[in-house]
Image (cartoon, rainbow, N blue to C red; front, top):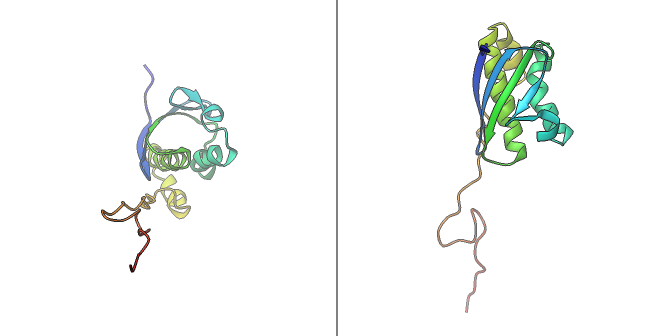
Length: 130
C-alpha cells in the first residue's frame, strides 16, 4: 500500500483540486493523465510545478491530483494551491517559502453574479427615453 505523506485541497474560482503527495521520483499525475497531457500550455504546467520548484523537491515526491470544475486556468491555480498545502503537511519548514511566494493564499476572486432585470453582472439593457 502506498502511503500519502501529505494531502491538500486547493481552490481557485470554481475549480477544486485534491492533492496527494507520496514518496517517488517527481511524477505528476492529474485525473489519471500525465501533467503535460492534461495541461498542454506551458504556463499552466509551470504554475502547477511552482511549489515543488520553490521548496527544491521536484524529484523527491510523486503527486496525484483530482481536479474538477472551472476552466484550465482555474484548475491550474487550484492544483498549485493544493500542492502548496500538501507540501506544508510533508515538512513544516516549507511553510515560510510557500507563504512568501503567495502559494498558500486562496485567490478569492470569483465571477460576479448576474442581477435580475439586467443584461449581465454590470451591463444594463439599452435605455430608451421614449
